[in-house]
Amino acid sequence: MAKRIVTKIGDIFCVEIDGNRKSYFQYIANDMSMLNSSVIRVFKTNYSIDTNPKIEQIVNDGIAFYAHTVLKAGIQHNAWYKIGTSKETDEETAANVIFAFASISDIYSPNFEAPKDPLSNWYIWKINTDLISVGKLPKEFWNIAEPGGVYSYMEIVSRIKSGYYGYTRIEYDVLKRKPLPDVDSYIKVVGENETSYYQFKGQYAVKELIVSASDSTKLTTDRPEANGYELRKAEFGETNWHYNNFISQEEFEDAWRSY
Image 1 (cartoon, rainbow, N blue to C red):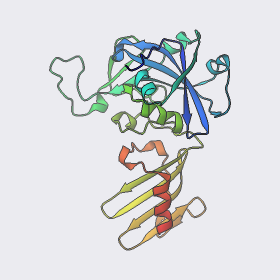
Image 2 (cartoon, rainbow, N blue to C red; image 1 turned 180 degrees about the horizontal axis):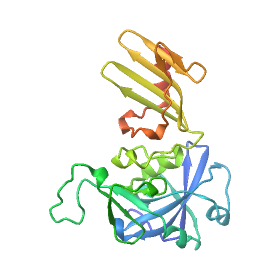
Image 3 (cartoon, helix red, strand yellow; image 1 turned 135 degrees about the vertical axis):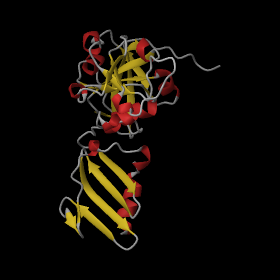
Image 4 (tube, one colour; image 1 turned 90 degrees about the vertical axis):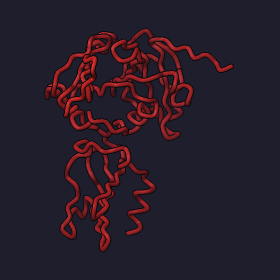
């Protein structure tokens, strides 16, 4: 018989990253407004794998982000494990966090008629409050709202590691992805006549490879212009990358060496 998984508000979980770092998050609420899912607050500090901070140190850390997830799935798939609990959940701050998502339909319409543009059909809410239809998301929320919806354990771990969710959503046209400053991201874009490979450090491209049927061009921060091309200046988050655009470091480096 499978072991029964019991969690309670205040529980603190550890996520190990690449075998050498770890981060922590706390289960702080259930949100009836979003499928009664678990709300977590993820702390900013990454610790070395052999460091074991005290609970008081963990919960007094700054907050990286808030999110909705399914705790049980993450436990079952060994994405995280419980290390303790704390009554300190900072309910006042959590109660004022704004979540937002863009919908293809009017969620309050019995016919679920789809509008032409989901980016003109945003909903915002706070934990356990009614969702509010706001049309286009006002600019005042662009840099403060958390992407709404319930994220899988894989996406939670992805954001802890890199600073952003890898899964493609229309919301990222407005709520820009924000990589951690020291994180390398690798992107491949296949066009009609050429394929581009990018390595970003945080928000900025540091290497770019453009491959066509007849030629290839390498650009770096030390050599940002060549063959009529210029190293990408737009920040990483300015593009709503599709999840198929994300590639591994190995694939990028293989392409870079091949040309």
